Image (cartoon, rainbow, N blue to C red; front, side):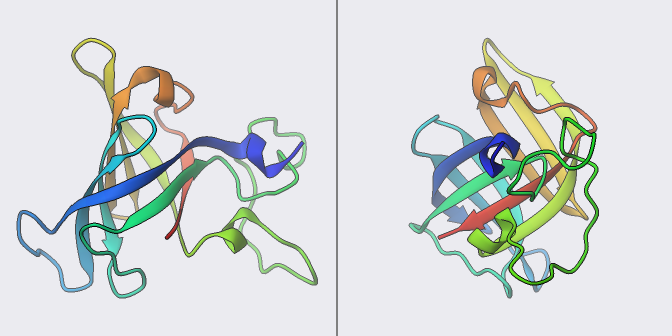
Length: 152
């Protein structure tokens, strides 16, 4: 197994708007973006001090069940039961390949009109809404913990 088994969504997004409704917090920006491959709409809160983004920039976004590069951890076939610990020696994780990583929980899954759905994830108060065709989001379950990984 490879780290690719842990990835349940991946696409490249183009930023259309940053803080369109006004800035609410000093260190947080809300971005609106559209994906290139799957025609998904993304609304995401990010820490703009750690990872500043501007209108017109593109970034890769991945949702993963685990940071492991060797597949599921232990006897857990979903790979969601790994714990955070400092990596030793030459150990590598998916996080090493990305610039910005968050860990959160799927708290809402809305079925919209036709084949469109919306998935809502909270990353410790930083919120995300990913909307699009259910075929691209069908592997995401309500209550599931997921990693968000981003790079420019």
